[in-house]
Length: 429
Image 1 (cartoon, helix red, strand yellow):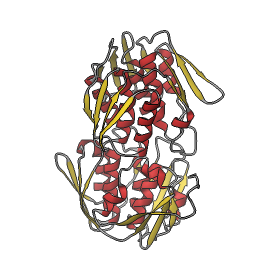
Image 2 (cartoon, rainbow, N blue to C red; image 1 turned 30 degrees about the horizontal axis):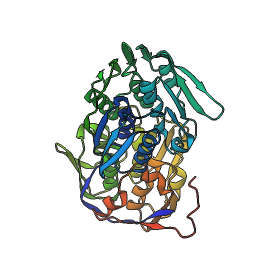
Image 3 (tube, rainbow, N blue to C red; image 1 turned 90 degrees about the horizontal axis):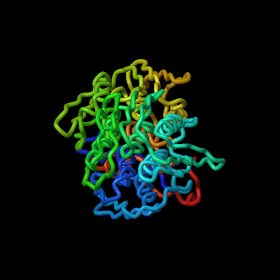
Image 4 (cartoon, rainbow, N blue to C red; image 1 turned 60 degrees about the vertical axis):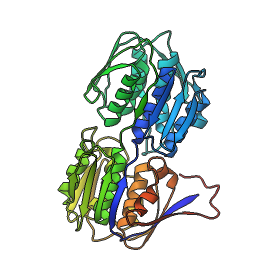
């Protein structure tokens, strides 16, 4: 087991290059099996979730070849299996995209329910199942929590999502691109990675229109072909480093971004008094004083992303005045507050609301990552705190951040990874 050790109080200065988008990669990689051909995917982030998704494809018979650290070729011509076991799905939530992809390829799928970050409750897939059933699939959930889906053939239909769900939108897109006729997804998610998936599918010969709006129309194609495609930059990784600079202070150019994707994050940082200059493919973040308070409500895109909420909570804990966070997407996403309390934050949580009283400074302490974005928040808190912070459960952080220690060290952070003796057989909670 490893932990991240940070000696805080160092201002950040320099340039950080953002990796490819985790959430886009985890949707696009399963989509490659729909082509029954070779797909070359570029700008893939080198993170553990992506490695597991590629392992799943290899397990079902795809030939996966690494061209370099950020480019892979996937030859799905000879895939014969439509079954993915719990041993492969338990580590991350996006493994459920294999249901839609396998349904689209074989009209059948047998996939164990996924794992991933636990926000204190079940992440339901009822909207996914609703879409699959409307397309003509029969869905069974057996006693081993395995989703068994099958259809004689899939037929285009109208699907209205009861709640805006990125996962359901992606899964229905994957299942329907080769269905007979037209599929219309209403109340669809509009996140950048949904648009990226649509662009990838269209590069393979699909007919997907309206991605980025709340109505997506998909005309089924008889067959798809291979392509070369480059994944968009990761807006959450970019936002995390923007907040890190805002909290720790300094002057950093965040490179390889799409500034438009960062609008909601940028707006809140500017409201907090952070200076941000936008360029074509980068943003310059300057922070030289104490931030000011602001209120945040997380919402589906283009609102403020829930995946940036823990990071912003750290910044607001250092702001002058009282700030309020309203979590509008996930229940029980404030579990990280217990860890931050060890570092001197003043946060009171009531359901989906958190009231944050800004403090003068944070103090280093031993903490742990309860999930991916909570882990990012611990890193930001450690950068801003006085003294030393030690973060355990870094496996969560590795799920979504490529070379986070090296990237932060390159801009002046005193941060390192160390092996914890005697914990080789520990299991992260």
